[in-house]
Length: 404
Ligand code: SAH
Image 1 (cartoon, protein in one colour):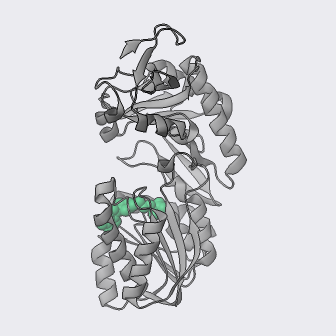
Image 2 (image 1 turned 90 degrees about the vertical axis):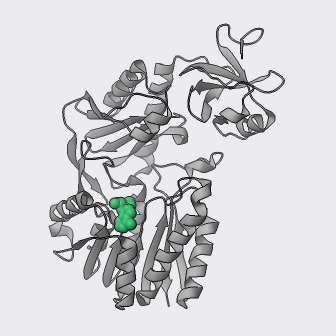
């Protein structure tokens, strides 16, 4: 570690990285791992210049003293902006992007961290309530928080309600103090939002996971195009797929292990009775693995099945175990579908690639002795952008298949 000199900006620290890390940055990826640094310690939340082994400055980044991702790139070698102004401009760009590409919803991710060139910041909009999360030391700054509040008001009106939520596990990794919930603007934490012409409840103050899976919005609409007959939504959470299926199916059952999630699902269904083809959805609190085993044994059959399990593979090492989990679920679902039935099967693990997921489905098809024709291979909704140079920004797989 050395203080800058020569062509560099006085006072700004220069951190040297090895060849592998330099190649990654040149390929447009914003992360530098701690193991790729010439030094083991990096300062907490500082702007640093990132230089290759020869000392040539490649980029400017924000540092973390604790994360394995020690540096995150925010600009080129000559980046000289003040951070609040930088954040303001990027949030405004994020809002403009969503206004252009998100249809049929007042709920979407306004800022998605690296995918919006704002590493460590997530902002979700649910109608008039905005939920902000800071995931890095560098983003956890009062002046940046205030800049975010100001730009959200400028973009969405002075009456917005803004809440900051803290993810305990991530804050711990970044050695940030715990944060439950903080009102940054307005006074509401609850609202009702729209997705594809259906209404849903949102409460930023409810429990650990709160909010919808906004990344599935376009897949809900796609699922409703193919779904028919009797439908089963496995891992239904607050009913995102189930409600969309209930607009076109004759019977819908939602399954989840979480009672609070099912209570919100039921309230969501009540909000939309007039728009649903069927007045009632059955909500079952159960372990999906056990329930599918029992149903398959009892030869309970369906015309449509949705599988949307939580991320089984949180890292590369867990990918094998995850593959077995996906296979078991998909195998059982294939056996439970009537001929002509539709399977909508999802994985939200980045570590399970689209290729891995295809192989898993092929192997389940062989074991189930069914022909599986893939109608669509889909990904995450457009408000969760996939950046070509950052593979980690792509994580959601949603395959729609018809079963013979
Ligand atoms: N399909 C939902 C999102 C599902 S998220 C949507 O579109 O909104 C994953 C869900 O799986 C969570 O609600 C969680 O409670 C549930 N879950 C996790 N493990 C489970 C298990 N073994 N059995 C049933 N549900 C489980």
